[in-house]
Length: 359
Image (cartoon, rainbow, N blue to C red; front, top):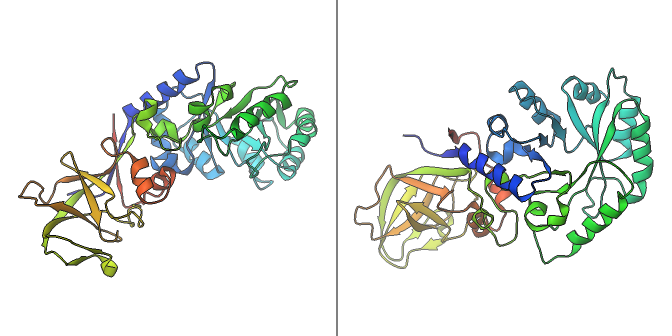
């Protein structure tokens, strides 16, 4: 009996990409596949995003894994490169790179290359993480135009820290400032991440870079993917491995942190933080068994979780499927019950979880 399983719905993936393109019909799509495609499986996801124009990853080993998997579309390194020796690897594998500081620009200029590399110049308009200061744009741009190691087109981009909150005007301010800053540069622009695509139409420029939304999950505050017409791609499931009866007043799990207020039955399910399920999920966090919701009780342990199923009367049995999140239970809801974000839950799936890809 297969236990912890991540079912990946590839038809939902294709649907979400189509939905994304419909929201920004005049923009090219750079699908973000970093962190193992947000826990969905890097290479397989890339192989099924046929209509994406390019892919983005955080680090060079992710990009190399895509090339080893036969992926030929353009690949952009969102963090750029960090060693002089990396520059030749970029050229050999036809990778594109972000340039976000003086160190990277200097290494690119000093490299001995047989051909130029495509570059994306990142401007920090308020994230204050990576990117050059707006006042540096002209100097960096001119140097990229001058060096023979960079292709003639210099893509210009920025990043939003607060686009998930449509009531926060910082994003609108960033959009205005970036467009004003780049007004006299006849180059492709890229502003919108998933939250920008969904919440800020003015950020839809030459390129968009959807991440979380193509996996059917909402990046917006207090929303789920269905609110935007998206379909969940991952369904995390397991099985009931035991049914236990307990009496009123008995304690359950490590630390005895939950005490039953009545005689009841528990379903023990094969899932825990060893599979990537959040250890801090609160009492009452829902799971779905046979189409009905039941609440977690006691502490999440490494391999097992206890679920209060009440007066079961034989309806739930050992071997029954349990949905931890997916089509019937949005991962956004589970994340809220664990005081975290859906990004973390998806990315924390561990290697012992089996993956099943469904066309």
